[in-house]
Image (cartoon, rainbow, N blue to C red):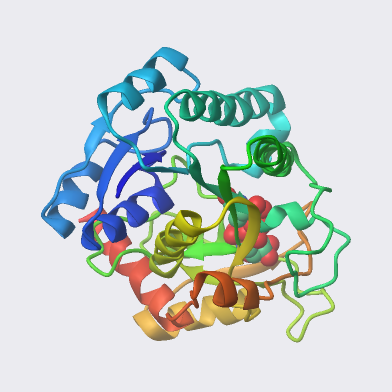
Length: 334
Ligand code: WQD
């Protein structure tokens, strides 16, 4: 299969590209490098022995996307390209709506022109919003996001459902990711956010590496076993493999299908932190601070639908996640 990966040099895109190439597929990457580096191509080649075809383009650019489709026989698309920082999306919402919606619309229109009918979309557990009880399952109402980033995911899911309803031969798999962490075991690719990280695991890893001084744990007075928030941390290599299963599913089904990708196991902030310290034998100084605005006490998946429809199940442990996140930082800072 020849698969177009928009945003394919980013954190999840690059890991998915590796799994695709290792499984014998071909990959074409379209990425504007807004939150990724072109050197990731070299790392993908080092890991797999293959170099994907690369277009440095913005997926909002209709002519550029048209060029990708006319120069390549694309069998399916995995759409990762999008802005993803929650806090930033509250400061510059229009940029988020313009970018995330426009890339999707441009892609769908161009796919239509070229008869490409299979799309896997990078959605997020954020679409479950603040009112559903945990664990989240796919039939729950998923249309009440709490920030512009989350709204773009909810809106794109709706666009894809409408598009599938109007085009009966089209398939869209909406993968709702929980909290992806870790990196490829080579340590060559990983989560490399610009500036100070917002997410817990890259923050822990940078404190361990000495680039940041101190971790603040946002709140220990939640109604959870140790008072800190519960999340469904998922190894990015497991997540990447989920995309291959979704492509197989899309080859045999039509319509829009939302599927959670998570482990189904809640882990607290302090559990993750102490696992990181234990597994890697490092020091991570931390303080307990106040709650962060917008954080939910608990977010984790019911992961049965992925197992049933995709025959996919997360395999890696929290220890694997901690070890591999750290090996990327070690590799990267040396
Ligand atoms: C996890 C836990 C924090 C940093 C966000 C987005 C979501 C998705 C993934 C994708 C929380 C705590 C964090 C720190 C801390 N976006 N924490 N100190 O908030 O579950 O999900 O990222 O692109 O849409 O909302 O993930 O990693 O930010 O936080 O105590 O310095 O770690 O309070 O409980 P979150 P996270």
